[in-house]
Length: 423
Image (cartoon, rainbow, N blue to C red; front, side, top):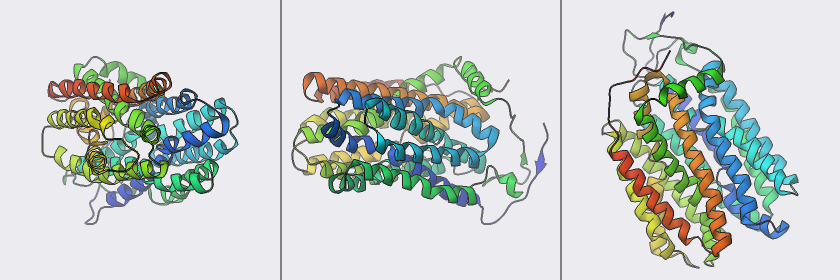
């Protein structure tokens, strides 16, 4: 394999790439929380059930996760800039075309397929890939910052979407999401580079004797599936898969999709509930960046166990906190839940890199796929629970129990030396 000597620079462009990646993740994530606000107006206008609406969200969540390992392989094959630009255009197309939906299957096509493929190509493997290619130091911190961008984009749009839905209708809200994704495309084309070698530089924090080793550019599908086959032989892979599936079920799938409808069932206005989720997004920034900082310094498996344990306790008490008005206990819940929202990502990425080496981003893609499978199952299951029982209580309690399982599984992960997966 060839290698190329490179130079260093005092101000490293890696930080510019990280900023653009952050903005791209914010733009792509605009739709992630939109269904929780759009469900009720669609239900009122067309008479569709929560289960029908949850189906479109489920397809979205599944594709969002299942695209992740293939997106990581595509980024290695075609580069960050091309894959990211196409992904943002898919998100914008899906959100824009959804305004013409008059049947549930049309939502499945737009919300589910187009936006699922687009956001899946911009899933958290994008953050892992940027950190892996542009940084040798501060990787945990960078993953934390970029992960915060994804979750922040998901929740920061909520108040604006809720106001638009109330004042102008759900179609205008969908167009806002489409516009947000389109605005980031020029920045990606201008400033996002695939690797420091494109600028004749070394990654941030690289030693003086660093040399660049080009990745093997094979078929993306073959690369992703081959990596899965080898990773599946490692016990830690399955522990990470189990924990991250529960993570997805208790964030995107349950709280992200059903918190607003559940609060509305208790008499809370949609705008107030959306504001609470926006608070989750604000504190997610703090929590995820702090998690990245901690991951650079402490045992990631202990961090994971703590995060899942605290999340379970929060879900256990949530049914007793919901009411028609915003009270201090529910504010405390959203603050704590926000700090924990995706704090699991930096330690999970770190374990993938530590155990699976340079194949870590693709392995994380498969782990992230389990995150979205869990989210998809939870999104549908919670909708069914609501339709059958008239409330979400059983869903909240079930999710709390799953979090405790994830805490135990994470605490028992064995830290081993790096496993080489490349064939």
